[in-house]
Image (cartoon, rainbow over all chains, first blue to last red; front, side, top):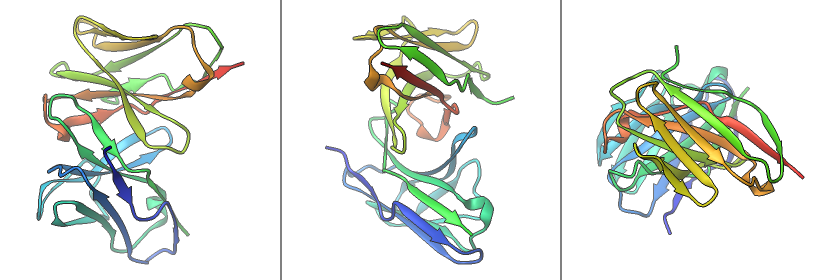
Amino acid sequence: DVKVTQSSRYLVKRTGEKVFLECVQDMDHENMFWYRQDPGLGLRLIYFSYDVKMKEKGDIPEGYSVSREKKERFSLILESASTNQTSMYLCATFGLADTGELFFGEGSRLTVL
Amino acid sequence: RKEVEQDPGPFNVPEGATVAFNCTYSNSASQSFFWYRQDCRKEPKLLMSVYSSGNEDGRFTAQLNRASQYISLLIRDSKLSDSATYLCVVNYHSGSARQLTFGSGTQLTVLP
């Protein structure tokens, strides 16, 4: 079975703190993604990576960075957390190209105080 | 205007009812279409792809209308377990996940 694991289900951080969200997949997929999901706005793409050390900005990259040092691991970094980054963060990997099926992790709910 | 729009609901229907959701998309170059299901506090999961000729999977039927730029999902004989949020997803380049655009979802509650 496909497995995408996110390191933390729930986090509470203070404004200005650095936040790391980690995602590990066991499917040997090249493509990995970070989304955030907010009520009424749906899922919005923050960054994606199509290979080790490769990354591309999504629709809302401001305030975020990513790291992909190994194929199975994709990290999302908030250099200085702000209250408007309170959200659900979802990591996903891309399976077969023609099916459009994204495999998601369980999500990390981040609250920034 | 959002690229992919859905009626957020909520749709509250009794068990056994038939319910339909629509989703409109603005980019006429869209190539492939999907419905995902997301249970409360869970991650989204692919429910079914939507093909030009329409397709069915058990109680679920998906249809595509390219001329009017909308897709639909029909659920027959609703079950309590169908309660979830249904996300419409549009892909502008087949095979490129980079262009997957999600609607904000339609919430369904099936009542006993």
